Length: 117
Image 1: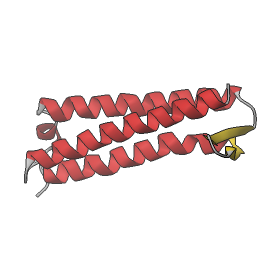
Image 2: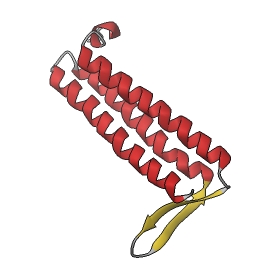
Image 3: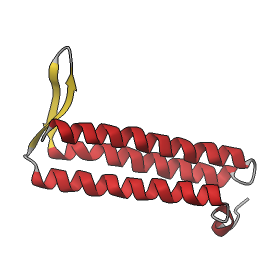
Image 4: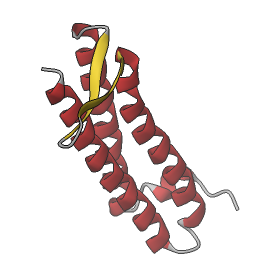
């Protein structure tokens, strides 16, 4: 049941999706920590057109976004490893979903940072 991990990363699609998501998650962490360090202790975290600013919180609430991205990538990577030898398409879908989640959460992080500039 346990196969060598190097066989998983010989597949170019798995390798490149994993690299893209890992670099993106690391970038999210760097940007969120950099902004939280230079920002104030209290941040505006959500804005809606109808109600205006409706969610504020301390600076470390901003770190929830890269944390969610990292956790989803870790879970999907483990599942992709377990399913790669059963059906490669499942591994591709899981890592593709990780990439899409990373993109959506990066947009959310960008909006939260832009709201506080």
